[in-house]
Every structure is written in C-alpha cells, then in structure tokens.
Image 1 (tube, rainbow, N blue to C red):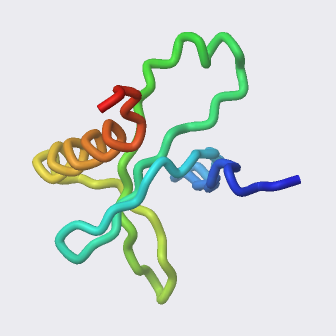
Image 2: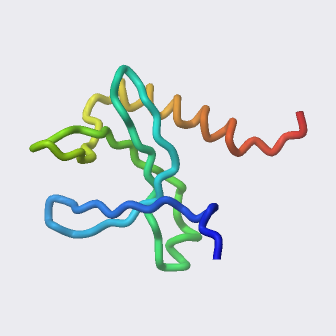
Length: 98
C-alpha cells in the first residue's frame, strides 16, 4: 500500500494530559519562526457534518532542548498567520481552470 498521499498526523497533550489528534494542514516560516496549521481529527460522523472547519495555529518553540508546539497568544500575529495560511490553502486547493 502506498502512503504517499496519507495525512500527516500529530497528537498533542492538553494541560489536563488529554490527547488530541490533529492533521497537519500546512507549515510556514514567518519572521524566523515556524508555524503549523492543524485540523482536529473527528471520529463521530455527525460531528464531522456539524463541524465548522476551524483549524488551529501553533508556533514551534524549544523547551528544555526539545521542540514543542505552543498556542499563539498575539491576536494581531494570529490574524496575520491566518491570512497567510488561508492564501496558501486557496492556492493549493483552487479548482478553477485558469
């Protein structure tokens, strides 16, 4: 079986130690930092139907010599990153016949 087109998945632990699985939609370098756009994996079929398509943006940070993902707290930066990711998604998934 060829996994060339399989989703890139990541599991994150929240503050309560609960695991949450995400698909890595994209990564970008911005102002010498790396950011991930992550989409939560949803198991429940009805929840998939009701899902609003919201994704999350995390910053790669180094803590105790290890790379970890952290929430982006700066709302202005978050808006800027969202705009960059949205443009990239639109160019990647553009179905028009140009």
